[in-house]
Image 1 (cartoon, helix red, strand yellow):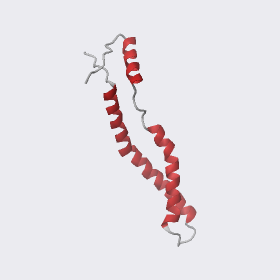
Image 2: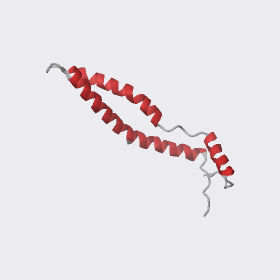
Image 3: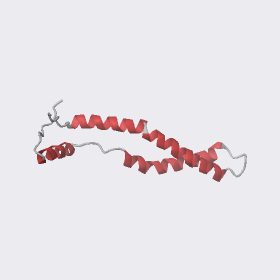
Image 4: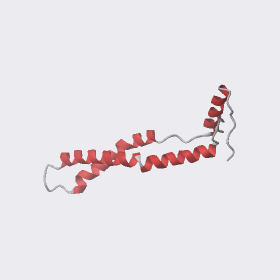
Length: 106
């Protein structure tokens, strides 16, 4: 069995962009929809003591609360961008196990 070459920095950055795109189009949208649904429902019941309360009076605070609560979650969920140190760490790990530590040139 032949060991594959390590990915270079450019390849790692391309993979990172793909992961971030998948996160933003997949998980992030689901999190926003669920969070907005929960906070909208809560704000609707908190602010809707009268039947004539306009839509924007309970939806605007729900939107603001959702954005404030989602910012730290999004910041933690997006994977960090790879650097040259990551490539060097992968090479060092392969060297430690006496494996081929050559990096792909593509």
